[in-house]
Image 1 (cartoon, rainbow, N blue to C red):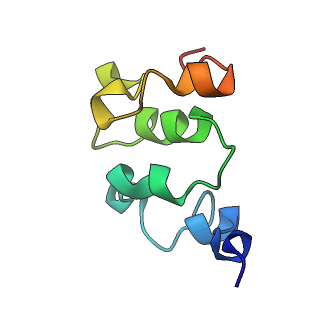
Image 2 (image 1 turned 135 degrees about the vertical axis):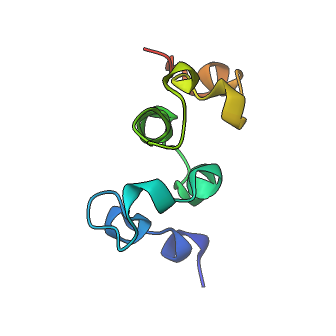
Length: 79
């Protein structure tokens, strides 16, 4: 089975229609579910709007988002 078929769709990832309330989303594992080629934008958004995370963690750097991500994608995730 090709690897692409295992990538979760946005609905399965729970972007909008998640069975869990926002406070119970597994923040630490969201980045592992993103398909290849997705930048840190959605991860950054979910960390910034998660009620369990202090607002000062908006950049996501405290949660292991690599600084080299900009070098690989050419997109600044802190925009």
